[in-house]
Length: 196
Image 1 (spheres, rainbow, N blue to C red):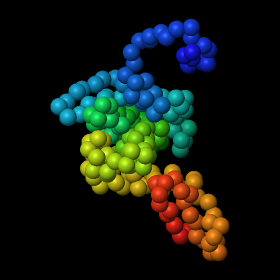
Image 2 (cartoon, one colour):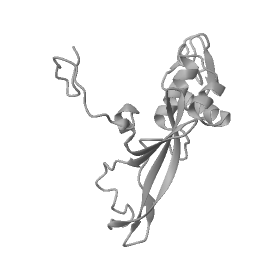
Image 3 (tube, rainbow, N blue to C red):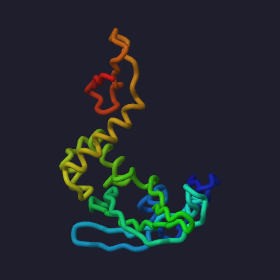
Image 4 (cartoon, helix red, strand yellow):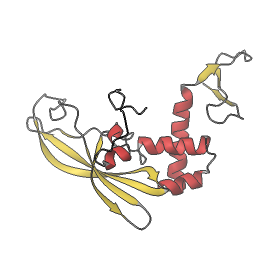
């Protein structure tokens, strides 16, 4: 039997108002879709940051209240929808403290790492595509609509970060500075040996 979001059983399936943000899983990234544009080879979703921090408008240096100064945009590749590359065009508000003049931006850490070109969901999609579905980096970069180098660098960084939590001490290695990544962390048939 289907369940509602709060855990209650539903006697039958019901429909709700269509929500592009939920469909693209952008609400998990703290983003709200405000517009869309379908181009020949890709989809562009205009987004804004959903402000959850009540202290975002207060200066972290002097504690004074800030006024909105202007906004900037940031482009992120997102997981493709129907193998059509999807780009997020995020409008980020900048604030200026009325007391000390310090300027800062809204926090986008839920959507992506600083200076990243791929959203967190795009990173996960790329890593799962390479490890689980055995896609090539070229196919992943094509699906995301980014260059091969961008996809490769992001996947290697995310893969090493994900596998770092799966490290265990090797039982047949006497050197305590050597670690083995458990089988299945990156590819089931390979064992990776990393010196730390």
